[in-house]
Length: 223
Image 1 (tube, helix red, strand yellow):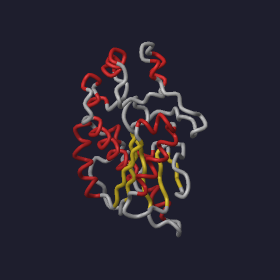
Image 2 (tube, helix red, strand yellow):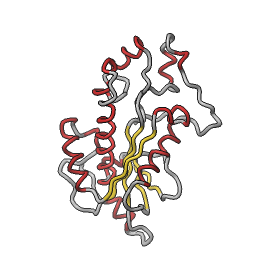
Image 3 (cartoon, rainbow, N blue to C red):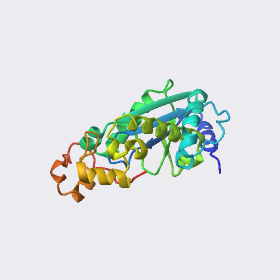
């Protein structure tokens, strides 16, 4: 089923809510690179054809769809948290910072947020409506999922490290990535606090041990 505006309209039926943003992230389960969050505000118009959860859109179609979304959406904001932030702060706090950067870069401040998933990593001051599989249910969240995916994939394709296949796997643990990591070790783009290093004896000494008091613990749910 295609996403709809049902959730947006439910929120907008409240007198205090005039603008709703859909938010989604990509890169949570990658071993290298940033985590990227996109926030999208729409005018409730008909979206470009084929819009749905980015995981259900082929790679060949995602780029052209993202280009259409860029001119269709009423507002788009992006936020990233670097791999260093993930290592230092943990994934939950990194996601929170990336999401706030995305929301704060929108041309209009939303009164409410539809967030894909079941964990609110954004928090106050935005009222957050959690929606499991929101990227398949909500048009604004679906748009955010496609735009975030295309932006992060494009960035990962520019950083080199051809042996690791980042242009194809975007930093996720594909067989090519894992083989290169075992043979060559982590690049300057890898998250060094992650447990994959525990399985690489010759590189285990590079693991970053984050101060547990620095921020909240690393979120382990992958997306």
